Image 1: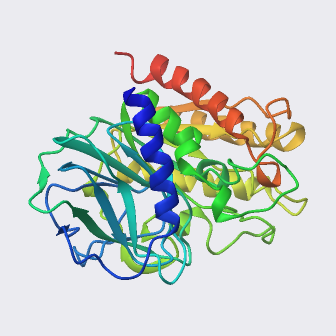
Image 2: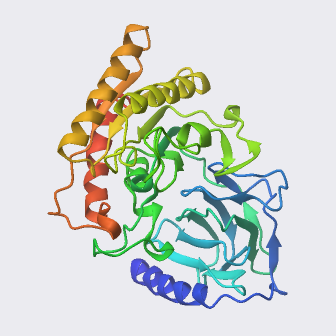
Image 3: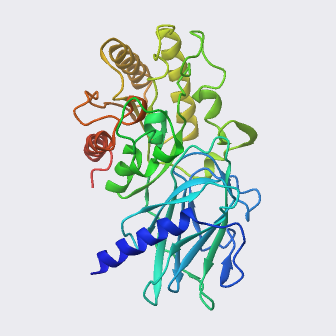
Length: 366
């Protein structure tokens, strides 16, 4: 019965989220983003603590609250979030138009305390999403939240890690914010299966040295140039790596580097090695997993695997034994495709199962 009630609430909430209006609520308790009982996961520009801004996928906002309802306030056109109340089935929330600034997340909850988990599910490259708080029932407040997971994983990747097109079922379709969903990506599924929190430093089209369609000599805004930024393509604030230290960093780059004939395998290996060394400087004790992705096929798959094997061998010889290798099974269409022939929802689930098994056996052994 409880599951049925949550399902009804989820459907009603999704509908109301799409009808969110610009007028800020005049009733209820508006909890500002700077409230210390709100938990954040991910790279967020919080230089103004009441205007936290973000554009990497996978940013999370968590809290526990009193009352029977919950609303969320965000900048209009911030984009899409997934929401789970009390760990029930998640649903999508939209801040898409000029008048979308308040979304109803829950109604008709039982009296008492409840939890909320929000995740930014798209690449907000031009949106620069801003969270502006929660609205609670009159007389209610936030309460001490559940502890965040102790395990921490950072994912560095491209569109596959973002969850590009995962909600689509036709490979010929192209990118839409509506069909990208990081909640359904292998990164989130793996982290949840391992009881971990995660950061996603991922961007569609990005490479280790050459972005999609870029010159063979390399792109000026590949991952090595973007990795240190709090917000993608915004050089005004560098990320403080002391704020969050992962147990493991999983790197999935290479699909775009070899997306067309004009590539240079030597430059790929050199740039990738430099990125790994930089990640090691940022996180001296973390495991770093060099991964080949599922969209690589035959020739380019072999080139990428060889380069990653070389990098692992080079760093292992220099005494860094926490560099590991992992290969996803190449997709063959048997599980369907997402937009632009990206991994489908089922393919992401398979990827998560493969990576979860690897991380359990090699890193999270207990």
